Image (cartoon, rainbow, N blue to C red; front, side):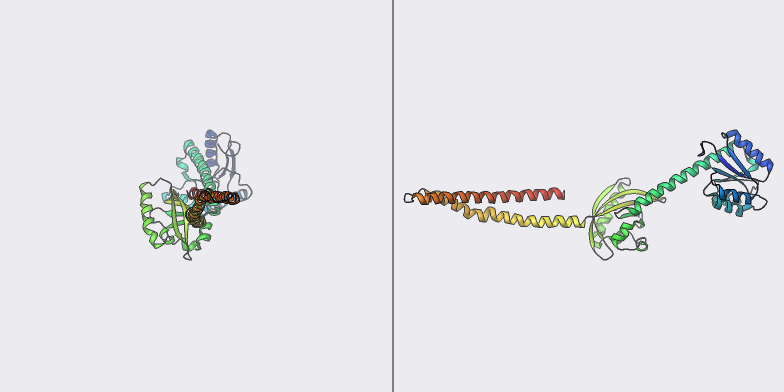
Length: 341
């Protein structure tokens, strides 16, 4: 079905009345009420295409009074605005037919061999091919927008050579290289030398499972030599017909530094907790043990016993404080482990 309410709008550029009548009959035999416009010169075709690009298909005779052959094809294609152009010709030159197709026409049909079926098939295939190409261009546009406007660095890597095939703006900005520099580089160029064996090991694993999506935490190197920790998700990808992988990179250096700072702080808290639970509580325990001994002595008067009770109460309160601090240190240590996980 065509785009114009189910009816194909067809421009026939043909100066031979007999050939036009034959093509018109063929079109009405297979298509439902096609809307046909006929012009007989290049000048007329140029004029109508300049003012009306709402055709679905163009049928082009290669021998017009004012222009012929390859030049005619090139100028009609320029004016067609992606409308499929099917050449109908009496030329039987095979090489010229191949060259015509390479110029961008949709099909090349010989008038002497033209049938209702061959014309119909050519129109349907050409129109569907146009839709497919339009869908493909739209898909590529969406991919391009997602790729280039992503805030995360994204790399497309040749699966065999490990060279970069494409890089988005975020990768260029984050790593400090120019696009031209990166397109001459590969994965090994953004890894520290000591990390190359790990890289090769990971690539070998990927080759064992070429369809699998993998996830790794790696060390990358920027142009200025700075080393960063990155979380990388890697998936198989076909780029312009080349087997490749796409890698989406997240810089987790700050996150790991934050975790390291928390771990260092927790180590200090553990030391404090150990001091509280061993060094501080040891003399505190001795005090708490001496109080009942003094309290039970025969020569201790009531006033001293009263003070000893207050001292025991304070010692017990201090002991609870020490235990609470120790317990909280354990909780912080547990939360840090959960955050790392």
